[in-house]
Image (tube, rainbow, N blue to C red; front, side, top):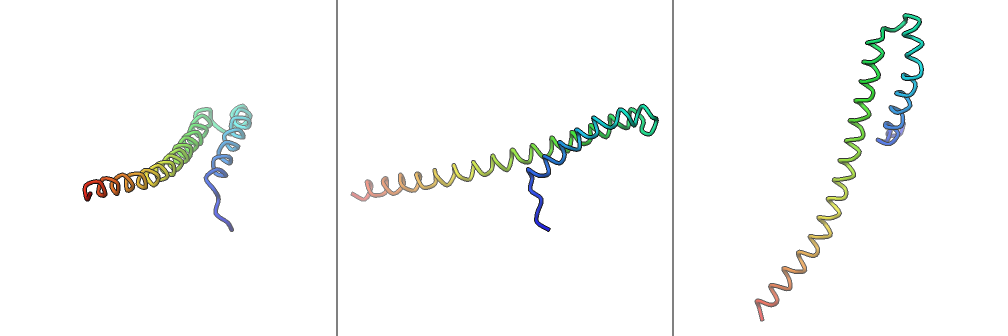
Length: 89
């Protein structure tokens, strides 16, 4: 089985939250599920979604940071080389 991507996990959690919001009122009405438990279970999944989205943001941020550092490292090396050449003249 292939690895489940972060994007797929986020989509799945969003679907699950939608299902719970749609189905739990009926389960509460028919006394299959207590209202407080239904609210709690939805809040838990919303927390999972928040965590996954934060992880997604950090991964994107870290990738951008790596690109920026690489780009600026090359520029910095060029400036250092120019300074050294100027000092050697």
